[in-house]
Amino acid sequence: MKKKTNKRNIQRKCWSMSIHVNGYPQGLKGNEIPLLARITAIADAYEVMSMGRVYKKALSMNAVIAELKRSAGYQFDPELIEIFFTNFGNGNKE
Image (cartoon, rainbow, N blue to C red):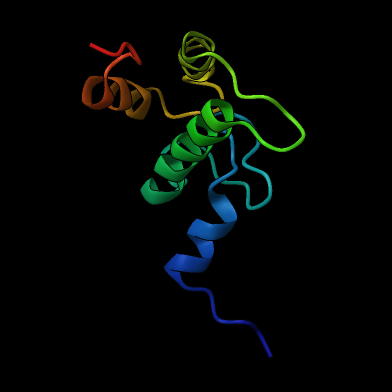
């Protein structure tokens, strides 16, 4: 019996896909990757880099910003990265 595929399952499986490479595991790339999955990838990366993990220290805000900008167009949707920084600033606390 074939498992039913729904939008939430696709988004859950796609959030870690890079925007321009082979689209592992489902072969999706670019705008084929669901919007929510592309947004989640940016939010997750930001949270991991800025908050750290038990096994890895948090990066400085400048390093987080540099990494997100460097990865735009490769790992992350460049338009969404631009929107992220437009809406949330460049990390400077004013």
